[in-house]
Image (cartoon, rainbow, N blue to C red):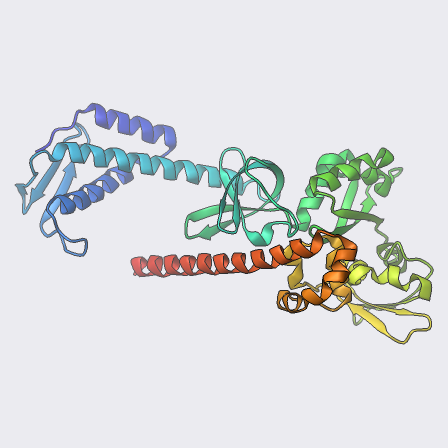
Amino acid sequence: MTQVKSEFMLALNQICSERGIDPKMVIEAIKTAILAALKRDLGLAEEEALVGYEVSINEESGAITVTKDGKDATPAGFGRIAAQVAKQVIMQRVREAEKDAIIADYEGKMGSLVTGMILRFDGPNVVIDIGRGQAMMPQAEAIPNEFYRLNQRVAVYIKEIRDTYKGKTIIVSRSAPELVKELFAREVPEVGAGSVEIVAIAREAGHRTKISVKSTEDGIDPVGSCVGQKGVRVQAVINELNGEKIDIVEYSSNLVEYVKAALAPAEGFEVNIDESKRKVTVTVPDDQLSLAIGRGGQNARLAAKLLGYKVDIKGTTASDVHSVTGDEEFEIDKLGLGSKVRNTLLDLKITTVKELEAKLDSLKATIDELDPRAFVETGKAIARFYKKADMAKEEAEKAARFAAEREADNK
């Protein structure tokens, strides 16, 4: 029999009380861990059964007894091993309880903005210190053309708590449209107080965002409130998003007026609405057509997303119709290219990384004209894209293996 000081049980109860852990669960975990340690001590393979052995812990004295078929079977010197195992189990349970408490705390903070600091990189993912705990920003939630560094402070949107192969994990985002909304709530008192409401957001993260706003109180200019004196409020949001362009338009229940605001800076066009098909047809003067569509169709796409309607745009004399739904997404956006290069590629109908890689050399002169450094940076971005894709595949395979193992354990 191995006697462990009774102070052990007093300390265990105190720790469990402070951390909100059930002592009985910890004791059962200690028993299981001691049996595993005993198996190693006896030189048994992991798959071999430890037949007839039992561990009991006296909750009053803290005495740990190992028996086989009812007889004392404690190996010599096993007390030190038992104490070490008990300590490890308690520390593990404490860490798990702390993590559970942090997760529970952040469950009540879903959909909020927090400023964190980048701790490390886990493959393609970014691990961020957000105060009491750590959060993960997957590659898909990062702004494509942003580059992160250790100890950098960033504003992130708490998106969800997700089950991963590392357990429950807080997921944060910088590409979510809701991040823009929360930034405006922070920078614009009228938005924070609810006297100005953000009705809709259309965002292509890292490039451009359109938001529509309306006032819920008389006498408040919603657009002016969000822009701020000399643009100081909207500029604070733009700075937080590393220069992402932001268009603020006033919401109108009059759909024709709303369409005109959403397609700004283009003007002087006719609007026809088909409510049954949720489609808007816009006829634009030829000299305003390129403004309405935007570089790479961006202005029209964001307007369609903002409106929630399919938008067809045509010139007064041209027969071609530019159609957008607002749901268009392009693989090249994952490269994090500058807006000039990205929109030029979309103008050339290049939307996939494979297409861009095949045509890159022939586009050198075009890209150099936009930015002398862009050609080399584009090549590096393509290489990073494929490397991240390989890493993401590895992570997915690891997660699948973990899920399969957990399912097998449950059976």
